Image (tube, one colour):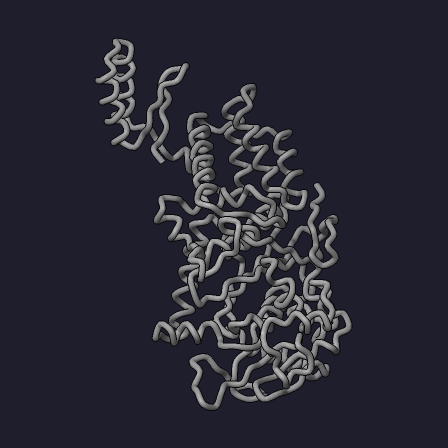
Length: 458
C-alpha cells in the first residue's frame, strides 16, 4: 500500500519511497537538555513516534536516530548569546554535565510514560566532538568558512540555494534578523560552526580544535551525528515548524557544502502546540510539563490521546478542558474494550481502511475515527472488535491491551450479585451501600437498561 507524505522541501504531498527497499532511515531533532521538556516539545516527539509506528505497521524496518543537544545551543537559537546548558548551570549553581544528565533522564522518563518507543540510537553532542570538528574541516577545505573574533562561521552566500527549505532569500533573512547584527559577519544569515571560549572566563564544556579552544555551534551536531548513523542522504528528517527557518536550513547547508549532496530526501515538520489559543511561554506561566498534567490527575497517555485528534501539520490548541475531554474519551474507550471479553481474529477490511488513513500523510485523527466506528459497530463480533482495535493500537500507542489485565475479584462478583438482589427487592439503601463497597475495591457499577454495568475505576 502506498504511503503519501508532505515534504516541507517543495510543500508537496507525494508517494514516499525509501532509499533502501524495506528500510527507513529517520533523524529526529531531539531535546536541548537544559530544562524540563514541555508538552509543546513533546508534540514533536509524539509525531515522530507515530510516523515511525506507521512505517513499522507497513512492514518497514526503521532506524530512528534522535540527538541529545547537551552543548552549543545558544540563547538566540542561532549564533549569539550564551550556551543554554552553561547558563542554566550558573543559574542553579551546578555542573553543566550534571544539568544535562539530569534533564536527559527526565526526558527519557517522560518519553516512556507517553508511550514513545525508544529510538534506535540516542547520541549526545558531547560524545561526537571529533566528528563535528572533522565536518567543519571539510567545510573549510571546500571554501565555505571564515574566521572572526568569536569563532568560525559558515558563509551562506557561497551556497546558491541556501534557505530553500523556508523559501526565504538571503536579503529577506537580513531584514528579518531577530538579533542585533554581528558586524563582523559577512551576512546576517551566516552561522557559527565553532565558537571560541572567551579568554576572561573558563567554560565547563570546551575542547581543543584546529582553530582554538571552544565548542561547536548548535547546527553542526545534527549534520555530523546523522551522517555517522544514517549516512547521507538519508530518508527523513523531522522536527517542529520552528526549525524550518534557521536550524534545518543550516543543517542542509552544512552537508550540501561538505559532501556535495542533500542531507535528507524528506523533511517533515509538525505545527506548534498552542495554549489557550496563544503561545506557550515561561512569562505566561503556561509551559506545562508532564508532571504538571499528572498533578492535576491526568495520565501522560491522556495527553497522547489528545494529540491524536489533530493533524500534525495543523496547529493544535491545548486547554485543560480539552485534556479533560481526551481523558474521558480514553477512559470510555478502555471501558468499552474491557467489557468485550477476549480478542479473536482481526477484521482485515476494517484494518485496510485504517491503513489507508495512516498512509495518507499520517491522518491519525481519521484513523482514530475508524477505531471508534469499529468499537460502536453493533453487528461486529466483540472478539473481532477487540483484536482489530489492538492491532490499530500498534500505531496509536495507547497501551489498550493493558485494559484486559484488570480482573474482577471474586469479592466484587459476590457484592455485585448481592446488589442485584437488593435492587430486585427495592432495597435501595442496601444497594447504594454495596455500590460504595464495590467502589472501595476499585470498580464502578452503573445501572443500565441491560442491568448492572461494571467498569474499573480510573
